[in-house]
Length: 120
Image (cartoon, rainbow, N blue to C red):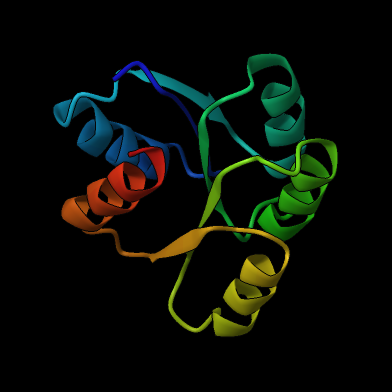
C-alpha cells in the first residue's frame, strides 16, 4: 500500500490532522504543499497517486490548482476539502474533474473511506 498522497492546505494543522488519520491507516508515503501554486509544482515533480486539496488557499485557489493539474495530467486523482457553505465551489471542482470532496471539520473515517475508495 505504498501509494503516494499529497496533502494541500494552507493550514499546517489541517495537513497534520489528515496525515495523522492516513498514517494510522497504513498510508505512510505522504507529501505536503502549503498552497495551490506549490501544489502544482509538487504534483509535477512528485506525481502523487492522490491529491487531497483545500478549496480556499492563498496564491492559487484549490480550484485553480485543480485546473492546472488536470490540464497537465487528465488522469490526476484529486479530492477537494471544503468548509460548510462552499457548495458552489464544490460543484465547480467536481465539474472540473475532482473525484470527491470532504467537508471540514473532518472525520477520520470519512477521509479513509474516500481514500481507499479511490486508491482501491
